[in-house]
Amino acid sequence: MNFSYLQACPTCGAPVELDETDRIIRCPYCEGRNYLLQGGIRRFTLPHDLPAARSADEVLSFPYLRFKGHIFTCQEKEVAYKIIDTTQLGNQIYELPPTLGLRPQAMKLLPLAGHGGGRFFHLSKKVKDIFMQAARITDAFSEKHGAMYHRAYIGESVSIIYLPTLPDDDRLLDAVLNREILASCSLADLENVTSSYNERWKPQFLPLLCPHCGASLEGALDSLALHCTNCVSVWQEMRGRFARVDWNLVPGKGDISLPFWKIFIDFTGVKLKSLADFLRLTNHPVVVQQEHEKQPLAFWIPGFKVRPREFLKIAKNLTFSEMKLPCGEKELGGSLYPVTLPVDEAKQAVKTVLAHSVLDKKKFFQVLPEIKAVPGRCELVYLPFEKRAGDFLQVHTGCAVNSRLLDFGRTM
Ligand SMILES: [Zn+2]
Ligand SMILES: [Zn+2]
Image (cartoon, rainbow, N blue to C red; front, side):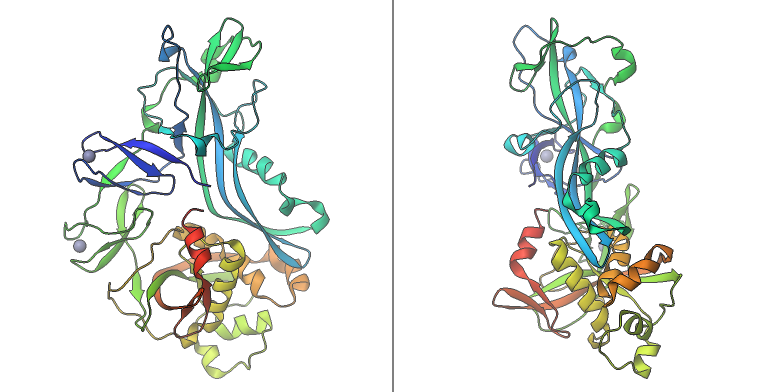
């Protein structure tokens, strides 16, 4: 479940309500359009409500790590998955509540932006360790599923949500609800375990302008791929600037075009260069022909978030059916569904999709840890889908995506 927050417009400073997954901030006051950069972990705070006599400089904020994403595991003879959506206390100095529960969703958060004053407790463990701790609670990690051969995190978003507290004699008060959170605590040594606000935590923005021609870039609020219809180009943020995306759109009579990351992989530990190699390894009931031998293998990973089961099914079916697809063109027309899964996460999904595609999983999982998959060339390809009852059907291959799950994926 997503949270929303109030972000000051980078152009005029007016508060604009954003969803956790939004990348574009469109200001209703000055009409400025800016893109939120991805660098580093984003930091938010629950808004405090202090008694009149107290000052914001006295506030002590505790970090909770927020994780949202899917874990895929290859264990014994199946690919299992779990959706993770949780907050975990990131500093264990005091006996504070281990999670924030639904509080972030129940109120408007604020991005951490200096003006609040006070001090911020450090994370006492590495982000990955806290994540593993959260993940272990889920059943996907239970040992009853047998040895673990591979694990991947997809669609993972990590942010920090601070809980503001206020020292009150020996007690510590929750500064949001103004009630006791710790009956007694000694606040010695604050210098070593906390920091004041760091300017680097401030959200950074880029104006939404095409680096090539200067025209406006277009995209849905949560889109990671931005389109310039003036010079017909597609861009994504890379290390603080817009970089060109290698893209094409496969023509066809559809109602909507869904984005896929088409990824070529350099495998070691297994022979997987052509589609024929893939058909043989996965042992699917298809007669391998000369044309399969000539077709270089590419994985087709959804460029959008969708339930894990559906994600694996679509990726597998399209990877098998690539030869039915005509060549793409450089056209930016029709209804383009936003890219919401970053290319780096699509790359991390490749081994899981491979494992899911193999029929005899039990045998294949034994060799899975020895297989290395190094991503090579990567393209963004929009494929036409036709609406039929509750599904979107890919018009050339017949691969189906449940339209209800697609809507659900926007909030994942
Ligand atoms: Zn504005
Ligand atoms: Zn342009």
